[in-house]
Amino acid sequence: MEDCVFCKIVAGKIPAAKVYENEDVLAFLDIAPATPRKGHVLVIPKEHFSTIAEMPEEAIHGVFSVVKKVSFALMKECDGVNVIQNNGQASGQLVPHFHVHVIPRHDKDGVHLGIWESYKYEGTEMAQARERIKKLLNAD
Image 1 (cartoon, helix red, strand yellow):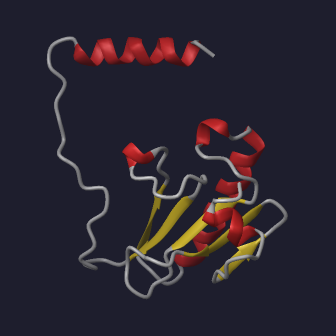
Image 2: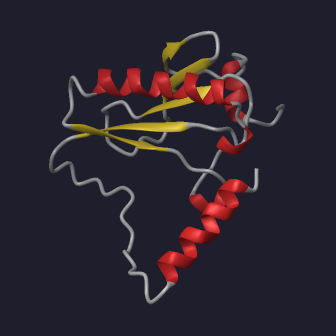
């Protein structure tokens, strides 16, 4: 896509701090990292897909294979990693090109990611949600 910043990075039109690349996948440092100076990495397919729903299985496998490789490497120097993937603006996806954040974490680093208020199902809400999702899964 012409307007996609990540497609421009893949095409070499915008510079990026690349950490890994193969034929189908590119991993590079996020320019606005969630943790300071530790190497917040974005892993993207080179082909443009807006969300995970658009991706063929082999593309998903390719990206997550690199996510695992990057996570394993980062964990040699940190206490853990967050692996985050958002789909659509409502979820916080800022760039409409599928990407996975791999964020290195250290104990007591003061960073709070993915903190949300927990809710409890009432009455039959859980059963209703289960049935609704099962129907959605079988609708394909």
